[in-house]
Length: 385
Image (tube, rainbow, N blue to C red):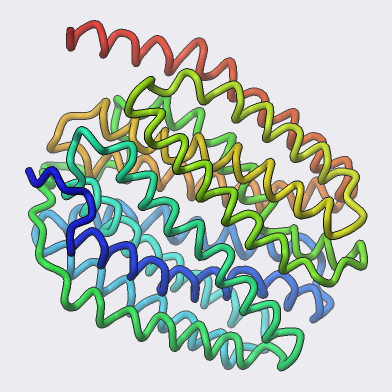
């Protein structure tokens, strides 16, 4: 295998993600604010995220099977097409039902896109640089969390909903051509019999990932609406702070995982996450929101790509696609439930109390690591000696 991490193919993947997912996150950020401005109940953003999650969850194993017979690039291009179609639907939307249809379609498209991209990346990254390679791969996703929301919130505030949706469509359409020129990669997918959602060796890692995905879903779904309720109108500053902190955390955690393993990253991640939620529960100005972005991004940024790398390391080479499916299914379920249940809790307890409880919930990932994943990784390490 090529020992160089930053190959032409790898850089095209990163560039594609930066463009496509920026458009996707532009859409995701302004949608809750748009729904709130239409006068709907705060639970509706969570419901729409659950719709997105369900369509993504159901379709992901189907794309895994398709990759066993078609090229990964075929699945990737299909994902691009579906995301583009969904964004165009949002441009003409004025009804919650049309928006819900768009969420179904974008869920299918994003499922195809991330399944193909994750599997291709895992196959082309050199094994001895897997933590670093998957770290930068995930960094690309989180950089889009800064770019997309800033553009989206600014355009929405100045020009209404049509222009930002149109900009999202243009970005997704542009990145479609990057995927066309990517090299075909043998992803080594072997699927016989029933469709598989879960790789057995990834289950314990998935339990831990769920806590972070749940927290991420709740925070990123409601942060802009929460800021609007608190009369903080420059919330766009939250997103670049979040992205920069994610980037820094990935630069540290990827190399640290390759050298020392996962253990030293767990406790700092939990502590930073709790502090972030504690501050968020009391936030009254933009600088408190920015501080939350830094703490929570370091927490999430250290552990999420590390768990991705762990899942890939624990499985056999021909099970990487299924392990990636497990990773994204866990993310889908966690984010979806975080958005939906978070909306219910916020509706009953308010934002401050809800985010404080979320911090306590995140702390439960510690025992899951100590009594589950840590033991599994120790056994695997001893068997490889």
